[in-house]
Image 1: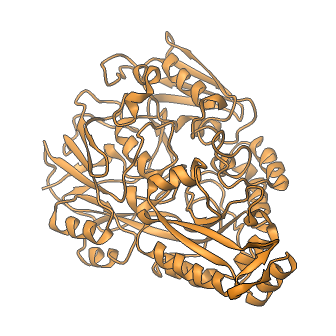
Image 2: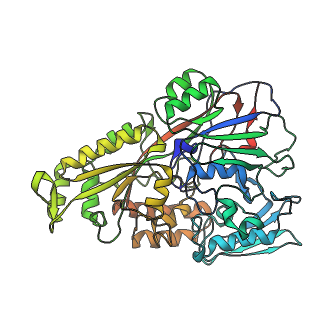
Length: 527
C-alpha cells in the first residue's frame, strides 16, 4: 500500500497512502531506442523525497526510481525478487536472503546490517517515520547477518502479512541513514536512478546507474530501451499535461479527468490504475463537532453518495465495496453495502436537532453559542472533478444548516495540514489507497499526529478488537475478521468510502507496466 494521497499527480491514486493497479489498454509496437530521455508528468511537487517520511503516492512514485525494497510485486500482484532473492516467514517472523553484488549510490556494498538498521529505525515509534505500521509493525526488531547475507525480523505482535509488508519498505543506504538531510532533495539508495537536479515545483532530473543489475524479478541490465535520463515534470493542470503528451513533450502521464477521453481517442498506449477516489474523512479529534457520531451520521445522510460518486469519477467509476483497493489483496469481501447511512435529508436534519444543533441566524445551526462551521479540504492534484465534488457537498451540507468553507490544497498541504496535524480541518476528500487491510491499521487506530498516523483521531474499540484477531491469522484465512473491522468503522461513520475510479496512465514513445505505480524497470523507449 501506501497512504497515497492523490493521484493523478504521481500517477496515481490514493491520496495519501498509495496506489494499486490493474492492466489493460492499447499497446504500442516499436523498436527499443537507446540513450533516450523519458519525461513523466507529476500533478504536484513531491516535497521531501525521504522514502521513510512520506505517505504520498506521488512522492512514492518518485522514490521508486531511487530506492529498492526487499520484495517487489509484479503486475499480477505476485511477490517477486527485489533486494532479496529468497524469503520466508510467519505472522511474527520474517527472513530474507539478499542478492549478491548490490551497491549503493556511493559505490559501497549494501549490507544486511544496513537493511536491519532501516527496519529498526522505522519500527521505533521515537523515529516518527510515517512508514511505521504500514510496512514495519511498531516494535519490530531486525538483525542482519552480513556474512550470511540474511535479515531476520521479529514482530512485537502478530502481523498477518509480515513478510510482504516489511518486504515493501524502501531501503536507505548507510550514508543516508547517517544524514537524512541528504534525502530531502536527493537520494542515497540502491535504485536504478539517482537525482541529478532538483528544482522544486518545476522538475526533477534523474540519471540511470549503468551498474544497476538487481531489478525486480528477472530484470536484465542489458535489456534495450531503458531510458538513460528521466525528467519528472511538475504540471498541475491536467489539460496542459494532456496537450504535452499528445505533442510528445511528455512520455507518461496519469489523467483522471475528462481529458482522458481525447487521449483514449488517440489510441495511445495505456495501463489502468484502479483505486479509491471518493473517500470522505471526518476529523474526530476531541472538541470538534465531527467527533460526534450523530453529526457524522447526519452529514453523511445529507449526501447523495451515488450522485457524488458520479461527479468525482466523471461518470467512469464504480461503487466502493471495501477500504482496500480493488483486486489487489487476498480479501474480496463487500464491507460497504448496507453499512453506511443512506441519503435521507429529513433524518439528517432531525439528527442534528437531536444532537443540539438548532437553526440560528441565517439558517446556520448553532449549539452553545457556536456555529456549526466546518472547514472542508480536497486535493487539487486529483483532477478537476474534486472541486466539483466539493462544491456539490458544500451545497448539500448548506441545506442542512451547516456553514462550509472549501479549501483546495496541494499534495504538500495535505501532508502538513492533515497528515501531520499542523492545521484545522473538519472533513475532507482524502483517498487512502492500500493493497492489504493490515496497511490501514495505523491510519485507523492508535496515536494521531505528530507521533502517529491516525490523522483523523479515530477511536473504535470494535475495530481494534477485530483487527487484533485478524493480525494473528496468516494471509487470507483472516479475511472475515478484517472485514468485521471495516464494518465496525463504517457503522460508526469513522470513514465514508463511496466511489472507486479507474485512472488510465498514458504513454507516447514509451511503454511500461504498473506495480504500485509505474515500474521504472519496465519502461522501454520506442521509436
